[in-house]
Image (cartoon, rainbow, N blue to C red; front, side, top):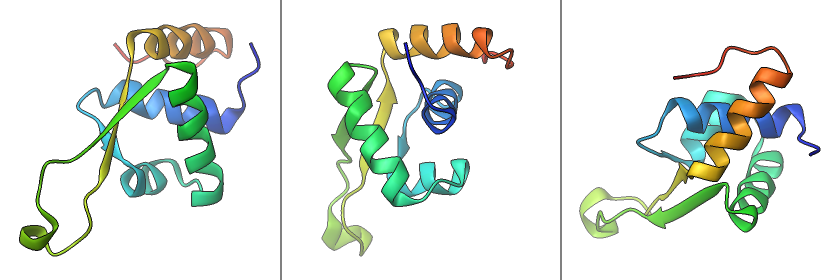
Length: 93
C-alpha cells in the first residue's frame, strides 16, 4: 500500500480523535493546506477508511455554515495502525 506522509498524518490524527474532526480542525491540527487535505479526505472516504456526516447544528443558530465531521472507520484504523508501526511511529491506543 502506498500512503503519503500527509495521508498517514491525517489517519493518525483521526485515530487519536475518535470523536471526529471537521475539515478546518484537521487543517489546524495537521498543518496541511486545504488543497492537500480535502483530496485526501475524499480519497479515504472512497476507500472506506473515513466516514463523514454533516453536523446537526442549524446554521441560523450557530451563525456559520454546517461542518462536515470526519470519523475513522475500523478498516481505516487498521490501516493507520499498520502503517504507523511500519514507519516506526507511536501508535495511538
